[in-house]
Figure 1 (tube, rainbow, N blue to C red):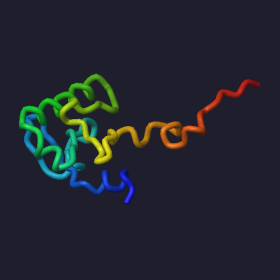
Figure 2 (cartoon, one colour):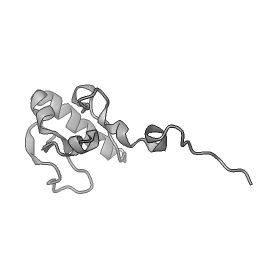
Figure 3 (cartoon, helix red, strand yellow):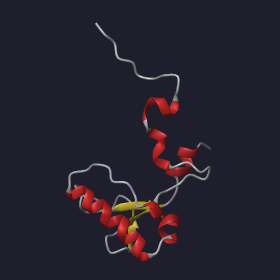
Figure 4 (cartoon, rainbow, N blue to C red):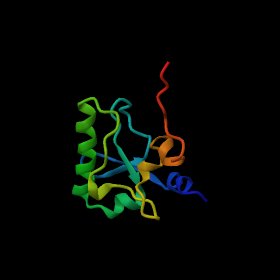
Length: 106
C-alpha cells in the first residue's frame, strides 16, 4: 500500500487548546477555526503540554488569517520511511521532477 494511503488510514483525533484529546478529527463545532488534528498514536506519544502548544499555535495562526499552520517540531507527523507527511503534495516537481513549470513568452 502507498505511503499516502497508509498515512490517511491512521486514526486521526482532535486536540483541544487545553491539550486534551477531544474525539475524532472533523468533529469540531467551529468550522472557521477548527482544532488541531493528529494521528492518535502521535497524540498519545506527546505530553499534554506539547499537545496544548501545537493546538494553541494553530489557533493563533488562524487568528492572523493563515490557512495552513505547521505543527510544532515535536508534533510533526513523519512517515515511516522518514519523510514528512506534508511533503507529499508540494507541487508537480516533488512528484515528477522532470516536469517543472516554465514561463512562456509571447
